[in-house]
Length: 501
Image (cartoon, rainbow, N blue to C red; front, side, top):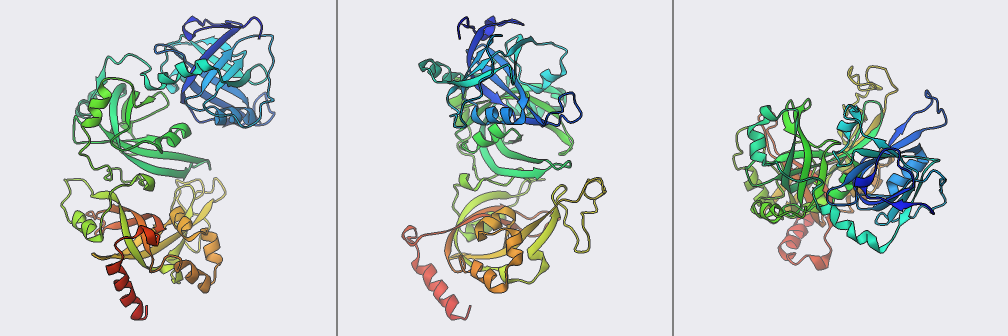
C-alpha cells in the first residue's frame, strides 16, 4: 500500500485519494437487494449496505457499499457493530476478493478506493441515515474497492467509542416531558435516555409483496413517569444485540428518535427509525442514576399487546394460585393485565389426539387470516393473495390446548401454537398432519404427566374477551435431580394415574 496515508475522519474532503481511514462500526442497517433486470446493469441482483463509522469521540461518517448481492451479503454478514475498520482510497489498487468466509466480526476491515463524496443538505437520503459530524460520506463500489480485516493492537483504542454518545447531549428529554408534549413535539426528533424493562421474542412476518421480515419489540422507562415506552427494532443487527439486553440493567441512549403519528396505533408515539442512533450502556454520568430509578419495576410485566416475551429473559416464578390472584386484581382504566412467568407444573393433557379441525389451521402468510376449508386464499380484498394480484401463499399452523397442574391448582386450556408448538413436539405442522393417531399419542407422552418448566405469557380478560389467555412460550422437562419439591406432586400424579387416566 505504498503512497497510502492515514487520515482522520475530520480531515477528509470530497475527491480525496490515497487516504487510509480506521474506525469502528457504530451502527449497521439491513442489506437490501435490488432487482436490476430493468436497469442498465441487468447482470443479476445487486446489493447495498449502509453503516456508520467512528474514529473519535467527536467524529463519525456514513458508509455505503454497492456491489453484487454475494459481495455485499458477505461483507454485511462478516462485519458487525463493534468491528474496527480500515478504509483506504487509492486509484491504483484493485479489488481483492480472496478472503475466506470466516471473518470474525471483532476484526478490522480495510476498504481500498471508496469514493469520498460531499454530503448535500437537500439530499433526501439524509433522513434515512444517522446524523454524523463529517461533511462527507464514503461509497464503496465492488470492482474498485478492497475490504479486508485489520487486526492491529491499535484497534483497542476504538472500542470505547461504542459507549460514547455520537454527539454532545445538550437537550436530553425525559419520557414525562415527551408524553406531556406529544402534540408540540410532533414530527420532531428527540434524544432520550431509558432503561430496558422488557424484551420480546423475535417476530417473523411476511410483507404484502412476499418478503420475509423480522422485528423485536422492547419496552423502557426512565423513572420520570410510571408510563413506559414501547419501541420496535427492525434492523437485524439490533434485533440480535437486543437478545442480550438485561431488563432493569441495560441503559440505552436514543439519539434522534422521532415523535410522529403512528398509522397502526392511531396516535402520536415515540419510535425508532433508520436515523435513530442507539448507544448501549453509554459512558455518561446519568447512566447509573437512571438505572437505579427503575429497580422496583417488575420486568416480567409488559404493556405492548402484540409483543411476545422472550422466554429466556423471564425470571419471575409463580404458582397457579399466584397467577390467579394476580389476574383477579383490578387493572387501571384502559389497561389490560398481562405478564410473563415461569410455572413449574405437570402437563396433565395435550389435545394432540383431537380430531377437531381447529388443531390445524391454514392461514394466509401475508395478512394472517384463516383460510376457509373451501377456499384457496384468504379472500381479503386488501391482501394481494386475496384480491388475486399474486398467487396465494398459505401456511399451516398447529393450535393445541394444554392442561397444567401444580400443588395449588389447575390451568385449563393453555394455548400452544405456531412455531412454539412445533419446537415442543419436534415436528412441523405438515408432518403432524401426516401422522396417524398412534404417532400423535406418542408425541403426547413425551410430556404427559411429567413435571416441566413452563414459560407463560398471561393476558387478562377484557370487555370483549371475558376469559384470561395463557400462551405457552416454552416447555422443558425438569430433571429429577433439579426437582427438590416432588413428594406432594408425585402422590398427586400417582392418584391421577390410578384413576384410569
